[in-house]
Length: 180
Image (tube, rainbow, N blue to C red):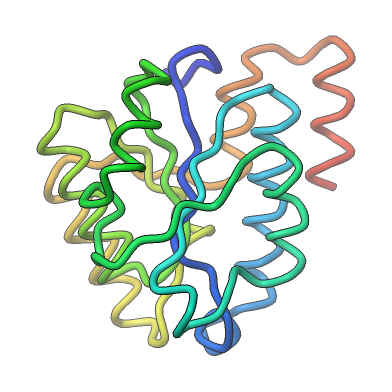
């Protein structure tokens, strides 16, 4: 079960024009926004990476505005975030075992990051409604490849309610406002 003290949210490459041509881009951005704000509500750390930002552009404005409240972007040149020494260092400092993984593209950067995280003994929880690819087939295949490797699939609401654990308190009320 996910807990706030063992989890970290990882946001992969939701950048520039590419983010706009993902399947169901508006819904993807909505779910990512909820997920980011939920992690912030739980005071959970977020690792935010961008693939070659000088060439692909930065994270979409709405998500960058949310993310920049609590975290700094980590630029990378490899498809897998794990291959970035800065990513590995920040993750090691957090001393967390559960990775909540979201972003684009499902079958490339998200998949390769997932593969490396699993190989390094992290538990990966793939947020299926907060990942996307340019085609539905590539998204579905990416999710399938990650689950075959051992990633667990979840969705934004299930993930946040699992982190919340109980249906009471001020944080629960704030969470309900966030998802509605």
